[in-house]
Image (tube, rainbow, N blue to C red; front, side, top):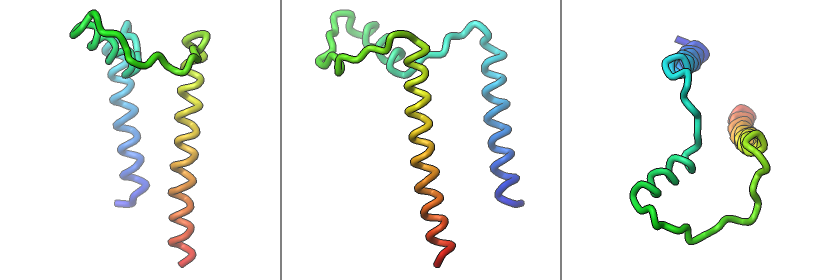
Length: 94
């Protein structure tokens, strides 16, 4: 079986799993790991105070925060794609 078919099957399985999760929980709220960790810490120790307060930048809204997260993911994907392409091109040149 060609690699393209295997990758296509894996992508379809992930898409089906994602759509099933969304359909099974229509009222669910998607949150990040930071918020989940904050909830766990607050349940374990309600008097906990963070030792570091951040760098002083607070995004003005949820959409801006999502945009910044998406940009971060896009930059990461570009860097990973560049490195993979670089090494593939280097191996094909040899």
